[in-house]
Length: 217
Image 1 (cartoon, rainbow, N blue to C red):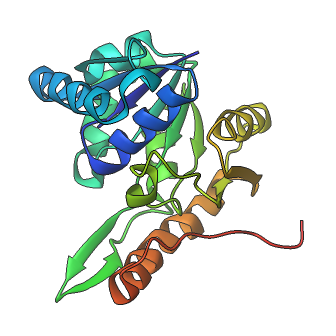
Image 2 (image 1 turned 180 degrees about the vertical axis):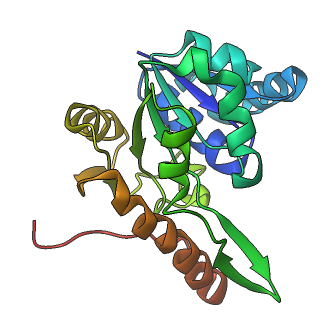
Image 3 (image 1 turned 180 degrees about the horizontal axis):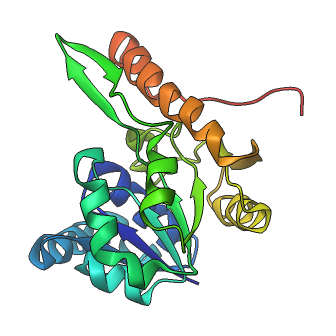
């Protein structure tokens, strides 16, 4: 499977690209700047060596969207809609995973920006022809980037497309220590996005890599 990461040069995008490549998938690191994408690939190969060599490529976001079987959207919220509008024809019919949380820092405090429902629902309205899934909001980028360690956490997965939910739950479990958990409809993405803001605060206070695990299932 080929996985395209839009915004793959940011911390979360880099971590996901690295983890998917280690698991044996071909990954295209997308960016607005092809040079920056290439530099990111070089850095990831230097960090992980033979585990990712030959499986990572870099290019513009357009190339990542066009060549991928599954598209991970890891761009900042401020540029999400514009990015998706530009790539809409290339995303039609593909499973697109929105990891975006509309957070902002005000007075030193992390909080959610006011959006209509959630960023994932906004993405689905922007490109309705794609098969939208919300996931990975509670898996910190700092943990993803520690490639030598299993993740030891859950990834909560929401979508109105049941088959896409199942596909992403199964895909994410290629990463050692990560369990995918189906949490139902896409509207539940608003809770996942709120959890991102909470976990950023927890990690800031405690200097850790806190995430979430669902017990009892």
